[in-house]
Length: 115
Picture (spheres, rainbow, N blue to C red):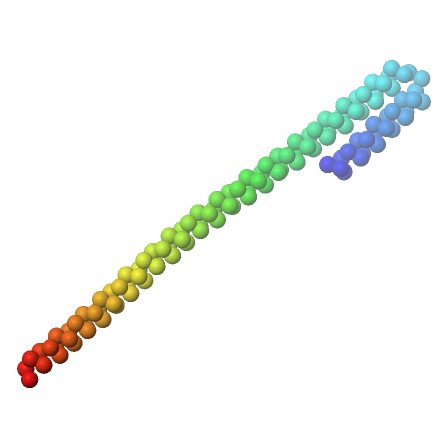
């Protein structure tokens, strides 16, 4: 935007200076006003374009953030499922060991009764 403002301001000043040398004061005023209007319009257009680019960048950032959040949610669900599965496997292993211990205890009890 700064790159646009300097040439526009320079053009406006050039026209204003030229107007001072021009014997027709009214024409000089119109030329200066026209140059100022053009500079203002160009400045507004540049500001609008910059705002549009900023909005687009913010939209892209918001989309990327939402996508990352979705991926994190999926990863968390997978981790929870894996943790649940691991807990279930551990519980099965404990139950298997408890059955083995109970079987051993029954066998020991049976042997003691036989003696």
